[in-house]
Image (cartoon, rainbow, N blue to C red; front, side, top):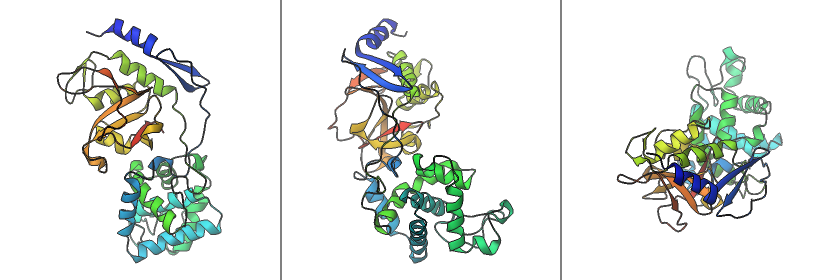
Amino acid sequence: MRAWLLIGALVTVLFTVVWTSGTVNTVLGGAEQGQQAQLMGFGCNAAVGPWQGGNEERGSADASRLNQEQREIAALIISIGKQREIPPLGWQVAIQAGMTESGLRNLNYGDRDSLGIFQMRPSMNWGSPSEVTDPVYAINKFYDVLQKVPNWQERRPGDVSQAVERSAFPDRYHRWEPMAASLISGLGQITDPTGCGRGVGNLLPPSQAAGTAIQYALAELGEEYVWGATGPDTYDCSGLVLRAFESAGITVPRVSQDQYAKGGAFLPVRDAQPGDLLFWATDRSDPNTVHHVAIYLGDGKYVHAPQTGDVVKISNLNWDDSELMPQAVRPGV
């Protein structure tokens, strides 16, 4: 049975979400409302999250495995981007697209008539076979199309790669974010790859969907934890997150490891805002060991479905927990 009286008290006393001009303000423990968050665009590589704490090492490791041809193509992407005065984000988008499509190789084969670094199809008006297999032509053509993508400098790099490529597998471009950041840092001599030469990257603030997801989760307080359950009367940790954001019109993956890897944009965990996802792992340097997820409420509190024998509840966050992942995830971004 749902704890409706408890819910009412918690929503009234502990946590109130106020919507003003589409942004989130929070009131916790009777504190005054926070000032309205300003709408800010992405930094170049905000989706990678903090450069320290795993991504720098992962990106460097991936980059170190590239052969000479791959590194030369990456360097050419950066060089042409610089010549055209395209911001470093554009170099990153192109590197992620090239790595995903061809492994940063100038292929003379591909699916149907796809060819070259970006697997461009002559039949889709990308150019002739000889043109799309000319690296200089292909990179310039990619940049031409990139610059026509609306608001491309304010979007997640992998999503922009997809907007140019129009792939049937849109999520695969995100895999190479850390590596691309490492390459623009090294080959492109960008000292702050998280911000791509424009200062520290900033994410859009939580939207109204974050509040809707929070309200859903709070309405489930007291429901029993059952491994593998996704509601409506029992949940595991990721099942609660799945249904909470589904209620807000946002699709996130089913399990916690995928929610971490593909659930949204990364940001430093200490910068988390209400509606962001928190994760715990047995090895914080290995995302494959993520075993728990929760929805952050603000003021050091989060709502979650803990474990067998427990119920959906609000807990206090230990910022020094050795298993707390250094990155939070903002769904819908």
